[in-house]
Length: 268
Image 1 (cartoon, one colour):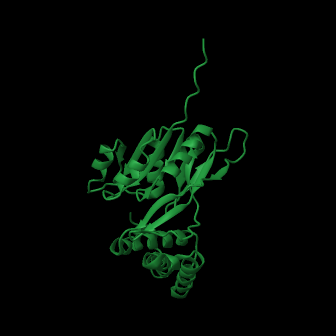
Image 2 (spheres, helix red, strand yellow):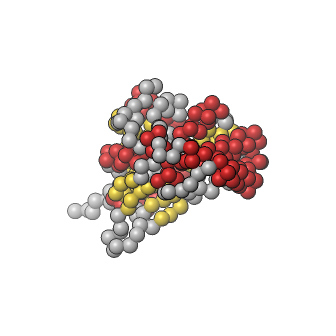
Image 3 (spheres, rainbow, N blue to C red):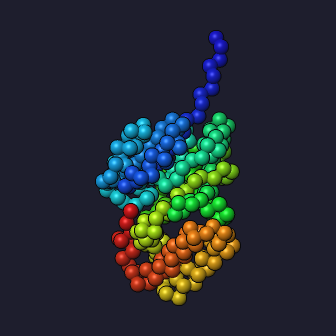
């Protein structure tokens, strides 16, 4: 009898949502090639869930918000693919990114892959901005145990069969990240990011204060605006760098003035 063809590796693209009706269609449509489009929703009261269903996603609702780690573990609980890619609702895969992802699946490689972003803010792509942050997003599912951390979640991984740590690789193509669409939305998100960052630092036993916040915010603005070429990106680049710097300032201010209450105040 002829040998059967080897089974192709399958992919789950996993997305967390909460009131993402304006962005979820572009996000999910860019990942339509996945074997499983998986959404865990945190109790949206807009059309997010309906849109996700219309696009063929498998949707599970968990409105009892307990933090990002718990929600990601719920995604993992429902994931069936050999690989799982965690895609944020404000991100879009380009064709080049999707093709590189499919090539990884065809290779059968085991491990963890990080991504970098192409930033889009206030309606403009920040073409000259050097986004350096690398984030773990693609995992061989069998290696991913769970996420932990009350505030900023971290992945716990199983060792490979030979006992060695899983290899960490980098994807070359960049993921489109629609970081900030409007000034109003950025002001609303500022509170969330500030409280998340402050709570993380409180857990680590760090100290806050206005002067420390000023130093953090100023150094962050200069790094983003000058060293990472935000100044070449016009008004949108200035606003993006300013909002990130404001987060740097206010998280240390909150760490000092709101100490002891931060974890309880963390919101979606």
